[in-house]
Length: 343
Ligand code: 13P
Image (cartoon, rainbow, N blue to C red; front, side, top):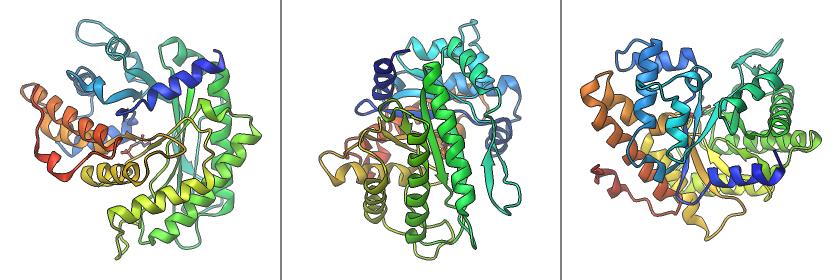
């Protein structure tokens, strides 16, 4: 696929007022999410739940693309329509998580390396045939006593860059996700330093592997204090520190920045994105969202595994998507939380 086509996909994914739904939970993760509502993680329950999200009336007004899991890209609706087609017929771009998860990094206690490069070229070609137009690879960086090590950061950055180069070769837009976790009691300053160092390494490796920056998206964490830190930063401080950090290390050529929610509350994830977009008339990049939990919590809880709740759950999903859409323009306010959308 020609390079312009990839940059068109990248631009469509960060179109104004829209963002990405991450619905690519692996088997263990979706099992954990379903356990919170007392639903067993069977293939059919996963299919029914994700179909519910993808067939929500009007969600395409706020959602440009959906990241799928390997199982989901092969599943169909009740009338045998592939779930991928449910998305494309609504103008939503299907994407796919292609990493195989984070495993312990050899000889580095508490640190992880993401696996999945072996055979990736062939898997990417198959996903492209199945309709995926973008891909995602997540690396995790943990902050703790004496970690992260430079070795862990660089090993993950190298894998991210190799994944991104292969994706572009096959003709799909890579979403490069280096996530500095918010677990721990570290300060916001420490998160700033680690995020800056991680992104610095990632962009150095992306350049080495000749990844076209216009044809990719970055999916980072926001700069936040650790969950257990006694001093939590306010919304404006998070927005300022995050944008300050990114201006130092993220080239302006990058197609867009789509934040992960990473365990923030739904409201905080929206408020932080909103505050960043309200900081300046324009930033060097589009600042958008690629949320999993912060978009799915309300529909998941409302659904609770019952067919009778589907419509209400879809309303809850569309409402959350609309609020994040407003945050793309810096137009979200807390009082919008109570304005429940009517289908
Ligand atoms: P969260 O928004 O729940 O962090 O999920 C985003 C994601 O895709 C993690 O890989």
